[in-house]
Length: 302
Image 1: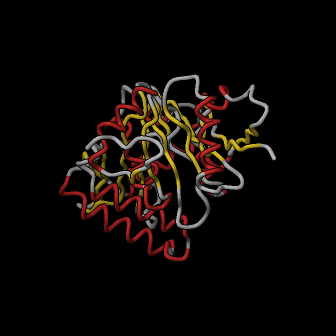
Image 2: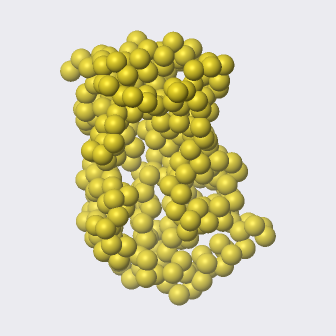
Image 3: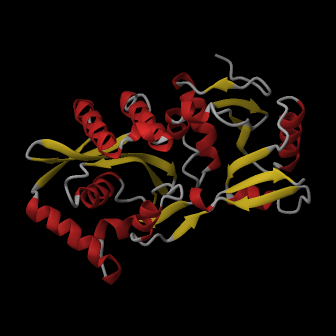
């Protein structure tokens, strides 16, 4: 099919993978949202649609609850004239009283910094956590003392095997995710419900999305799995990571083992955001990120 052209936004579908993936790869993004996998598995939750405008990939979010919002246009600078046009279109054609662009990266924020009509606000809950891959594999030094202890205790108590995630592992991964969701009562939390839907999409389309994964088995049972891919030439991104919540240390094990086997030569790993959840923020900070990947909301000033 011919790619949709602005303003004819089209739902994100698997048949668009190669085109969208090429546009994203050429941009070499740093933010975790900008992979085809992320756009596809979260498409229902965010109501994502896409089209092209010249050399730029445009992304429009129309979630079931809330008004329309743009994601950052992906493509070469300068993008200021395009953003101005898009904001006018949001206001005049879609009737948005407060046009906004969300999850913008630092590059776009810098491009718009001199424009007086925009208000640029950091979205701390959406900042990604970037780590040195070697740190998370070796867990060396005083900074990772507790992590090494957790991993070594898990090895002693639960001798395990690591395997690359293949099609025959997928049913066990789905079962583990369902167990996790039952214990966390996903049906009562819209955020967890959205995550569960994204996990199902990723596992159901694992091969078609070209993903890389790994599993840990204890006594033959899959007790943890992780799924990721390259975000850019120097960074892997972890899309999914689930472990048996009743098995202490399983998360530490899959975190370390997956990187050691799947991405040992990739300098950095992006482990996505914490969404403002205190426990998750504490856990992500405890792994000593090299930096946080900033994201911003950009709106027209009143």
